[in-house]
Length: 281
Picture 1: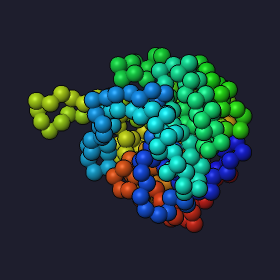
Picture 2: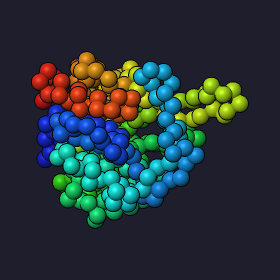
Picture 3: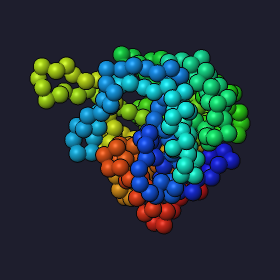
C-alpha cells in the first residue's frame, strides 16, 4: 500500500495499539496506529471502559479516560517505535482549532519520529451527526496537513455511515488526506448484568461492526471521484477477514478489537498475510 511517499510492507496494521506491546512479530506489520489521544487528558468515569458484549464484539464506553498527546510522546511512543515499522498517532479534537493545535504539537515534538497521524473524526455522544459535514472533515484534515507538512502521512478515520461516508471521504481528499480508514465505532448501548446499574453508552467494535464496515469500504472503493486508498477496519480476526476487506476494495486493514481480545493477533495475521494475501495495486 502506498501512502504518499511511504510504502507499507504488509497489508496488516495494528489499530489502537496497547501502550505496552509484548511478544514478537510486530516488526512484520505494515504500520502501528496508536490509541486515540487528545491535546489535554480527558478524565472519564472509566479507566478501561471496554465491555465484551459477546465472544468477538466489544462496547467501548464514551466516557472512558483519554490520554494526552504529551503523555504519548513522553512515555509510550518510544516503546511503539522499537519495532521499526511506521507509527501514526491517532488524534481527535472537538473542532478544527483543536485538530490544528494537537498536530502542531506533534510536528514540533516528534515530527521526525512518526510517519504521520490518523485524524479520528467522531461526534459528541449526544450529537445527531448533523455537525459532521464534508466541510468540517475537509477543514480538519487541511489544518492537520498544514501543520505537519507535505511529507507526513495523514489518514482520516470516518464513522460507519454507509449513506454518508462517501461525502465525508471526499472532504478528506480535498483537505489533503493520503488515505481513508473505514471505520471507527458504531454508536451503541450496553446493559450491564446488574439491573440496578445504568446503561453504558459507547461505540461498538469487533464482529458486529464488520458487515457495516465492509459496506463502507465497498462504497468508498467504488466511488469514481475518490482516489485515496482505504484501510478496512472492524471485526478482523482471521486471514479470511483480511481477504474479505481486500475483496471489497481495501488496500490494507487495521486490527483493533482482535488484538485486545487476543494479544499478538495482528502480528500472527501479518505473518500469514505476508505470503498469502495479494495487496491490490
